[in-house]
Image 1 (cartoon, rainbow, N blue to C red):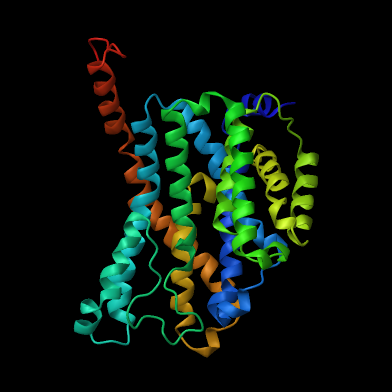
Image 2 (cartoon, one colour):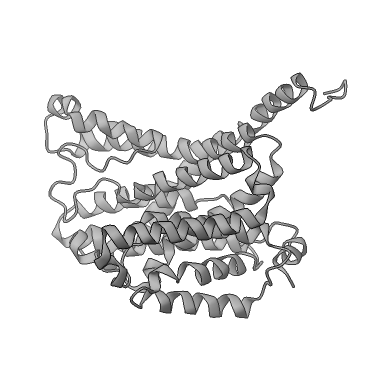
Amino acid sequence: MTIAERMVATDNRSTGFDYLRVGLAVFIVCWHSIETSYGMAAARTAPPFVTALVPMFFTVSGFLVAGSLERCRTIGMFLGLRVLRIFPALASVTLLLALVVGPLMSTLPFADYVSSPAFHRYFLNIVGMPQYELPGLFENNPEHQVNGSLWTIPFELECYAAIALFALIGLVRNRQIVLWGTAVFFVLRFIIGAIRHPHDLWAAGGVLPGWLLIVSFLCGLAIYLYRDKVPWSRTWGLLALALGVILLALPLGRFAGFAPLAYATVCLGLTNPPKVAILRSGDYSYGIYVYAYPVQQVFASLGPWAHHWWLNILVCVPASTMVAAVSWHLVEKPALGLRKPLKALEDHWLVARGKLTLRPAE
C-alpha cells in the first residue's frame, strides 16, 4: 500500500497525526521539565529520542500543510489559514504573559516594569520575533527565559513563506524540483555549517540547528508530493524511527537522522486508532506547545521545593493541557471560524478576475 492509498483508506482523516501532535507536544513539556527545574546547562545535551521530537513536529507540519496548499484555490487563502492557526494563540500567550503574569510576578515596581525596553520588545513575539525575557520575571528561577519554546516559530514561518513562494512561481507542481531543491538546500547548509562551526559536525544529540528543521518540513512536503510512490507500512515506520534515533546518537548522524524520522513520522501519522475523548474535544497540541513553558516557569517560581523534574511533569502537563483547552475554545477555534468570511473574500476575488462564477443563490 502506498501513502496515497493509505490516505484514501482513512478518508484523509487519519487520527495518527492527532496523537502525534499531542504526544510530541507533551514529550517536549517533559523534557523542558529538566530545563525549568535545573537550568539550561542541565538540559544542554539532549538524548537522541528528545532530539527527534521537534524535527518530527516539522515533518507533520510539512506533510499536512502540503495537503492544505493543494486544497486552497489561492495563495492568499493558504496564507490566511496559516495566520489564523499560528498568530491568535501566539498573541494571546504574549499578551497574557506581558500584561498579567509579568505585573503580578515581576520583582520590579509596576512603573519600572512597563517602562523597561524589554517589556516593549516582548510584544514582538506576536509577529513571530522571539523575545525571551520580561523585566524582573522569573529572575530567581533556575532558568530565566519566559517562554523558551518560541525559538522554533521563526523557522516555521520561514517554511510557510517558502512553500507559498514555491507555489506562487509554480515549483510545487514539479515534485522533482522540490525533491532536488531539498537536497541542494541540505548540502549547501551543511557546507556552510561545516565551514563556520566545524566542531558541530561531530556533535551527537542536543538541539538540532534550525535549518535542519526546515529540511524536515521539506521532507514532509516531498513525501506528500510523492505519496503515490512511497510505500506505507507500520513496520517500516517503526524501523525508520529506530534508525533515525540511532543516527542522532552518532557523530555526523544528526545530519542523516532527519530522513528516516520524516518517513517514520508520516507512517505513524497515517495510522488510524480510535480517538479518545480529549482528542475529540479539540486540537490542544499547539496550545500545549506555546503555553507549557511559561506554566512550568510559574511553577518553578514557587520555590526550591518545585525544582524537581518529576514533580514539574506531574503538575505542569495536566495544567498546560487545561490552559491549552481554554486557549482552543476561547481563542484558536473562534479564530479558525473566520475561515468562512476568508473564503467569501476569496470567492469575490476570483469572481472579479473571471476565475469563478457564482450561482444566483450564492
